[in-house]
Image (cartoon, rainbow over all chains, first blue to last red):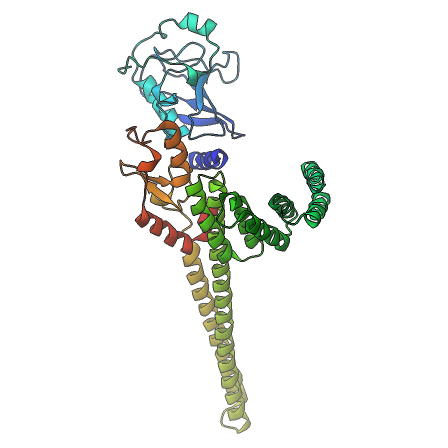
Length: 157
Length: 284
């Protein structure tokens, strides 16, 4: 498969030009990358915060979607990274986004376009809340994010 | 008996003892020269050892045994293409690889991706052979132009010497004129070299593949572009895998099947022309 070559090209392009508010935190290997994203407008929910996204790629990338979730770095760390509050983001970092599911993914998406989609998902949000059933989900879910059947019932968020 | 030798050979191959494995496969072939897998295994071993002439023989023998039209011979075709590239015969490698690539599409063989790569590799080698012979020719042209300028200078200098010997001009004037001639010739040579430098640089400066030739899935230059019903083009390798799995157009998400993919011949011609002039793009 072509995952390795495709990812090294994405990396090359990204390093040449990064969209505003997006930076590469870790990309030493072609299985897992970490990206830092920032919300660009004045949304009070996310002001002055940087969030860390973890991308995990299988050898079938980009035919299959990468696994993407937020990860938390403690406030005591040099680079603290909380999990952003959002009605589609669980407190363990799992993101409910159609684009990242096997059914919603398209191989023309890239790490860059995924970051930008998540960035705009935060920008547009006004609700200071977690998804319904967050605490249950966080305690009981052992499935991998892309195998979960989320309800994409609320396209306005 | 011969299959035991092959098994032992496979074991050595796994352990990385390629010469040992080659030897065992040779013994197996000696005992039973009509078993194609002995040849394919020895071919693969010889690829590791970069014994290209041997790879060529083995691959051809295996193709013969499998039957040239058989889909089981496609892996051997891939080995053969690698051998021909190793032997710097890219045109032959290209022909082997492109025929096998087409056959592998019909046969839905797992070799399609490897063969597709070999096609591109062969195109690249064809280009780089042309490119280096072009540069060599240009060097030769430059050398002969320089020789002409020097011959002209020597003739003019000799003429001045003759005038001096006949007493037509004085010694000081002669030395000055000779110096002026040498300076002129030196300057001319510099100008010619500069012109050659600019022209050779001009041909290689644009090392960028235009986006419309790059596949949106593999991010490589396309060599067999196909179009989806919505009108977007992709290289066959990636889109086929995606459509088989997802059953939708990657841009519009409209349901579609692999049968809905249509070759895009105009784009293919554009990619081919670009690759003919820019073989480096294969590695881009």
